[in-house]
Image (cartoon, rainbow, N blue to C red; front, side, top):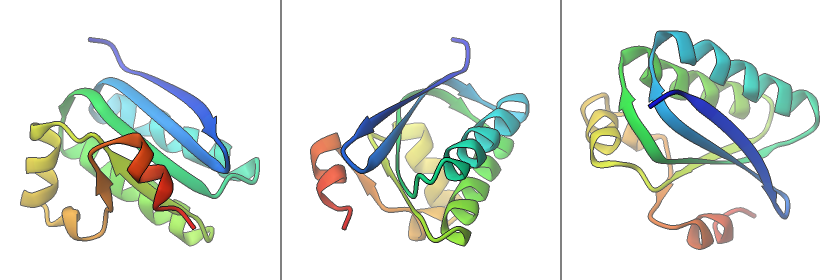
Length: 113
């Protein structure tokens, strides 16, 4: 499955839907998406990973970098619908301690202040 990113608004929260694999090539595109959204004044992000089919170390790095970039600009980034593979990788890398993740969109959206 090819990589794609789509962005939609749910009130004040920007939902970023990722589809496909997130590897070295896609990591840069993902980071640029967040930089573009931040430059437009967006601060609250929900990352939908339900359709991520593969994530490698570069993809993990891209998620951590996105988190650091968003937080550095005073924003918030949360995740939802992690696949078992993504959840396992976040646990192995101990990144599960920094990311808030939710099983469904409504509870994730409700968690933003």
